[in-house]
Image (tube, rainbow, N blue to C red):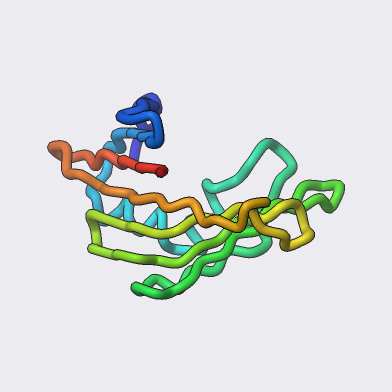
Length: 133
């Protein structure tokens, strides 16, 4: 797989954020990179010095996922959610909730952000599209 194309960010409505990136890889390979913990730990990192000590994925409708990142000073940031729809290799819909530092507290108003991801075939490539509402 070569480097992906530049990330495109648009706002289809005043309550949506759409991020699109085209990858020179089949949709199944991109899907695996987004859902397989061993692969995710290789690319889903923050700035230099951050690691991902926790990457748990129960890839089924109703299954949960949880990620925790940690920097060299021991500070942590986490997120997780629940899978609502999975159509391999083309679609993932889930909730997403960021956890404040290492306290485990949720968003102040207690809501889950819902996002959907779609992997669209684009010739030999796959276009990853995420919707946040």
